[in-house]
Amino acid sequence: MAEEKVEAIEANQWLITDDGIPAYFMFKLLQGKVSVYSRGVKVNELEVKEGQQPVVLGIIAALRDDRMHTASIKAESKLKVVRIYIDHIRGILKNEIPENIKKDISVAIDAIVANDKIESLKAKLAASPKTKVQIPSGLGEEAAAVLRQISGMYDKVAG
Image (tube, rainbow, N blue to C red; front, side):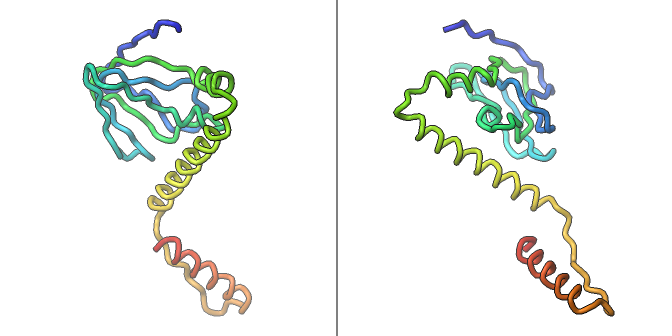
């Protein structure tokens, strides 16, 4: 096994961004504090103190076909990290996992990615502006029926 190269990252640096560009690496956080952002809103903080178990940041990108990060991560303090290339994780999953458990691993990954997509869609829906579908008077019956249907459906999803 190759020796891990520990990098120092200063506070206020963005490690990971959810900006629609495929990811090539993620990080193992050995020490320090980071904030997790979803759609520009801080949703979580993680801190690893010296001697604690490291946390891998950005692993979902390695599991997704499009390699997209779905959250952004910012250093809140000086960090000690190890950069992990996504191709390395994909290589492990493809070539080093025993055949007899690959199906179970695939099912788990599919569930993780599906849940991540669901959570992302929920956040998008919650952040969407609210509206009221207006049905103008004088509209033809068929057009009015379509707008009533849309209005009813929207009311259900927008709550």
